[in-house]
Length: 108
Image (cartoon, rainbow, N blue to C red):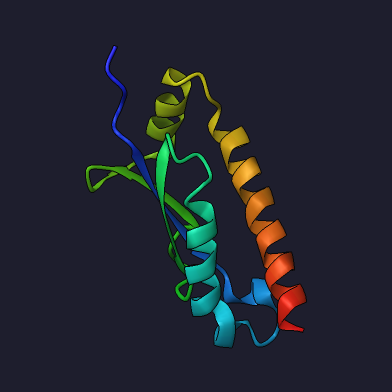
């Protein structure tokens, strides 16, 4: 069976996660976080981390070949790979939180 195409994950990061002056640091943080995330689930996904300035947009969006997927479609994609979407997102969020904490510790 051929390998499925890689999933593209767009993650919008809230400036507030970096504290009250987060807006001043969110661009740099997203650039660094994207570099760090290149090594997470690299066989499944490609990452794009951007600031979330517009709260009407979702935090996470998934696509394949520039076609946006619904959450149920993404869940099916993960299931075909023997993975669970919720678990994947939990692990990602844990990694992102750890990176936020590291970034804040270095900043202060």
